[in-house]
Structure formats: C-alpha cells, structure tokens
Image (tube, rainbow, N blue to C red; front, side):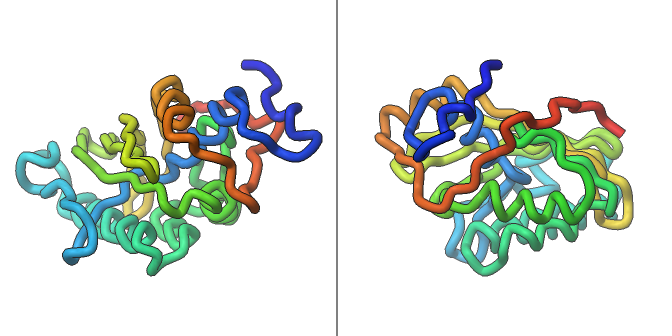
Length: 204
C-alpha cells in the first residue's frame, strides 16, 4: 500500500488514499447494538441471531454485557475508552488503518483517538458466531446518510470476561464508494493514524 499519509504534510483534505485507510479505523470493537427503545434490535444470543449452542455461560454473559456497553457508547452515555474493560492487560488489537496496538493503555488511547469525529456513525450487529473461545461479530457500518457497509470482527476470549485479541475487517472499496457518493468530509479535530503502522496481525 502506498505511503498515503504523506498528503497530510499540510492541511488535511478529503483524498481517496487517506480515506481508504482512515475509515477502516472506525471499526473499533465493531459491534454496536441498540437497546431500551433508543437503539435498533440486537441479535438474541440464544436464538436465530447467533451461533451460541456450544458457548459457555461465562462467554455468553460476557458477550451480552459487551454488546450493551457498545450500545451505551453508541448512544453517548459511555466513552469509547470504557471498552478496555473487555481486554486483558496485554491484549492485541489489529486495526486496518492504525495497525497493531498492544496493551490495555494503548488500546484505550486508540479507542478515543480513532473514533473522534465520527460520533454520528453507527455499527449495528447482525450476527455472532462462536466456536470455543473464538468469536466472530458480523456487523454493518452505517454512515450519517444511511449508506451501509459489511464488516467482521474476530476476537479471542481469554476468560474472566476479557478478550486477548481483536482484528477488524471491512470492505474498504465499498466504504470509499459510499463516502464519495455521500459527500462525507473530514471533520475538524480528527486524529490521523500513524504514518507507518505495525502490520503484524499474528494471533497470540
């Protein structure tokens, strides 16, 4: 991939190269859900909205709490940094734009910096897939104009209500097409991803 951030040596502008990287970084714990009448429906963890037949009670309870936290973050009643509660101290987070982020403090900082400026984007969950300690979250990313893109998050459950790994994946071609069509512009104060992110996506 080209050195896309070089274009921001001066004032940032809406460019295809940068947006291709930057929007991917918005997939943070990409499983927002809607509850309590304010939000749209979330998959039922015991029925058709998920694959939970062989899931431990502990992991099922963790996922339910995790999804509710995401809903509260999406609704503006929690900061993004609260989601570090679901990660181990040495957890690894893989983001398409920001690369490999390791350690709970670094992940907390990333959650704040990567999401500033897109508070009106949402990430509803369509399905959960669970195989042992491996969790796949199928979600949609929804832009302010209502356009949607498909995405997945892969997590590894470490026990004790925490995950030790997350990797986010999104079809960036689709995202970029929708952003261009909607006329979305870079908001003031948006934090840029690193110029040379760590691209190591190995799992623990």
